[in-house]
Image 1: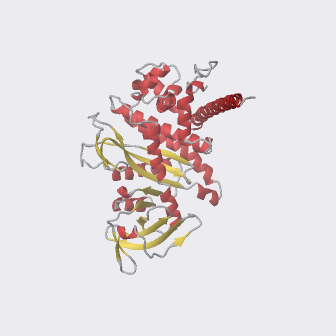
Image 2: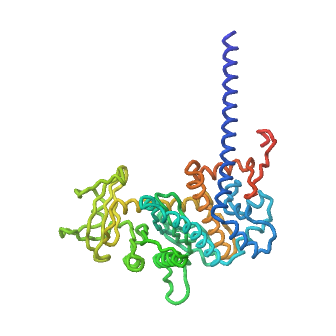
Image 3: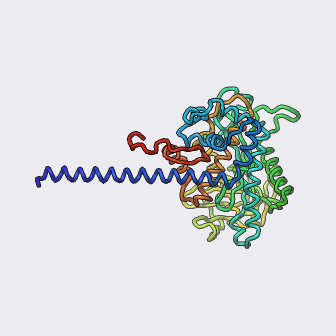
Length: 441
């Protein structure tokens, strides 16, 4: 065999290997997409979302057909390769006015009530399940309440909901809708459940306006959710509430301590002033720099050392300070009112705060929450609540059903690119390209 023939044969074999590997990779991606669709269907069934939400919407719309697939599709337009609900209707061949009818089916207070009820229905069985276990098991199912607000970009004067708000993510003032979210994180992020989500009006009206700031919203949301659990016969332990430095208000911290006997843990600012036990006065900026503190190590938080300080503050009174030094990260400190809770537990609770940022990132980027153009406040509330429910379904699917084998990003990506090859009756997904060759598909 001549060298030219040998070289041509080797290239032909290499092309066939690449083609075979590409086919195997395509088949694997399609199987993963089918697995993700089935997992989402199981999540819908486990969360009991269809029996309640669809029945309410059907009653309002006076529709005889099941809307589960369409509602789930409106939660996840990216699953169909679409950004907005109207693109979704064009792709699926639905009525173009369906999104407006569904989103306007319930008044805004009913949408929020639906989200709150869903949070209770998810958390109460988990609480009762863990309450019957040993103390070691209950310690792994600790609840951490996390609050934060985020701005969803919008432009123009839309129904009085759009205002100018400071965005901590982009470090500038944005025009958009500002929502305050309260979530419950179970354990070290095993499950993240949104329990309340009010929208702040930029110019509230009525007695005492403008007083609807996020501090008062967090106070009322936490009190309302704890009372709702108590009405269901569930007595929760003192809550551990975590928030960033924007929520470091002394009145709110004292309210949580006196009303709920709980702990409100926040990140400290560089401008705060404290007096240490030795009489030395330090600012928050000094706590954020390397100093000769009495550092401690704990096996519960490997790779992290901390210093625990007790100090009075002219604003907060007696507080507990934790200076945290983690390898590869900037030194910071967190504070709460004076407490006997151990430092490792406080630090572990603080490290769970990033789950609410993960939730906002899922809403804004994976679920494209900002891509909504509707003409009523009820529709905006419906849009945001449906996306929050979709975010909960993704968390439940990836963390509980798939047990981390599929992440939310993988679920969205695989279904977005391979929904034509997936069969799922509940989500109205049909394999449109079955029986077609690869190029035609």
